[in-house]
Length: 455
Image (cartoon, rainbow, N blue to C red; front, top):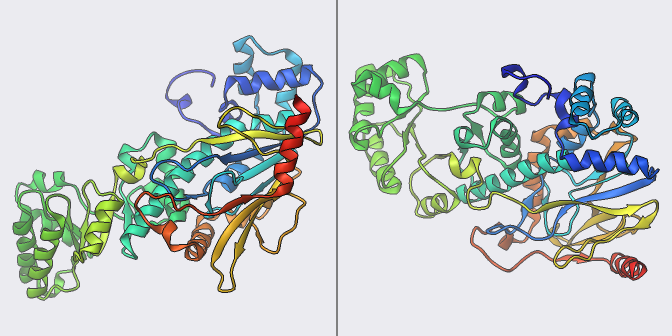
């Protein structure tokens, strides 16, 4: 990015061409120098599940594919690249005219996916397809990792609403905003992130900070001021003594009578199960059965599962660091690998890093009741009596089915697909009982032939 100062510190649409690794650009120039212009296919997938995950929730791949259809190198980007001193004038002129002209297929966002299943595949002139690697991986990695973590929290809550409080500890501005998109796909109900919520249609909400109460110096006055200004608000009751805070909310009800319109109290520390039980008892005794209880404070899916499993009277949960950083499993070994060039299969045989060649399809098989039984990764032209997951989303550089970019559409698809999976995949504990993913004989034979041809 040219220049310096605050106006050039964040990534804009005009910068996306430069949001890449240097070797992508040097390879592009080398492809052109070698007169390599044939079409190539690249597959975006992972070889194994990360720790503590029984599946991943694919997210961001359609969003990323849409982004690359608008990838350009404006004059400012060309000027920046020329200063690096590695690129020839004719190559820079080619970049200046760059437009993606290829095809992209992808599984729908919100699809549970497993090792060796392509989340997307790109087919285009080799330089065009190569250039997309870093941007595609960055977007899909972030959203898939965060959606997969959010899904575990949603499963733990068993229908109780979850709120995203994670922005402050997320890894940068872009992650904080686009993370909200992933959270919505996974079923998170609300976010405190105003920009992210407005951008991706997730309701925004929140409570109050301890500082508001501390600044007043008097807890009752703070509660009254906030409740007067924000009817149906949630009051934070643990600044000093949680149960005394609950009693002050009850006293406020006596003071305000019918004007009392507090929606909930929030517990943010201590023994949440015990405190929620006592708070519920006192609220109910005071006739405040409609005042809900929200819990937060260092929660993860295991803590939520214990609270829900113990019938703690908690109506909703707010989750911050664990959600926003996917703390227990913050990365996915996502790869973007060449699988064919100029009509010929391409493979890699490094130990533990095998590649299945060719353009592929993923079929999901269901039994008579609609339950998923297994998947099969096949060559693109193979046919099965099952659901084909990889569908065209970009053709000849033009985006298709733009309406599916709506995270609400993906969220509905995710709910449907998750309900069809074997129940053990929705468990939170670690386990070896994975989902059955098969590789077709045609794919295996093509790999064997491609390897033999390289020796």
